[in-house]
Length: 251
Image (cartoon, rainbow, N blue to C red):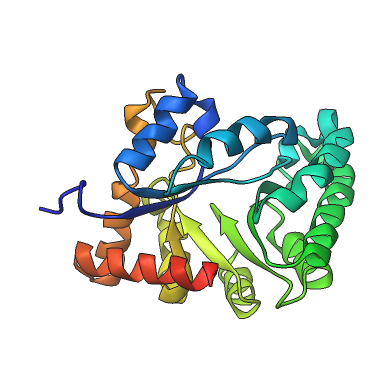
């Protein structure tokens, strides 16, 4: 059995500040050596996340403006721009064309366009991107405003088509995969078609956890195990592949 204490796992998209004890959740990631990208939903939440992450080896904080909040918080884009020079990591950003949020879709696109352009100008940013029911639009905007070589994109919980997944891979995108995705036959088929060297794991905690506990926050093993089964690999081999992928993304 793989020992959690010696295995270095990856959670490239989660919300540690939404757990009951933010500092404890960060400390757990550090203790268990889980390489973690903790994303923020508003730029005003970023300073505290960065303060805690900066004390660690394994946790990094990303600067976000969640598309689902743009209807009420678009004006915080100016705050987001102020903090951008202080971090390499950006997220959660993107677009959401789901029924609940479609009313703000045009405004979301305007905000996302500015975020992409700012990242391209700054250079060397790594973005964790939301793309619910609008993968084509997201990819079109990335292609237009974040040219290859100016930044890197990790598509979080990708739900687009197989053709859109192929296009994203051709554009150089990575994909962060969670356990909930691996419980969906359609998603499993798409994940299985992805280049193995573009895959990372995520939890999207706490949104994928039925119990909101700090203990659940570091449980990325189900996603790792599902990927190992899908690709016919041993757990140790999958761990090595994922670490190599993370190193390539960050290089």
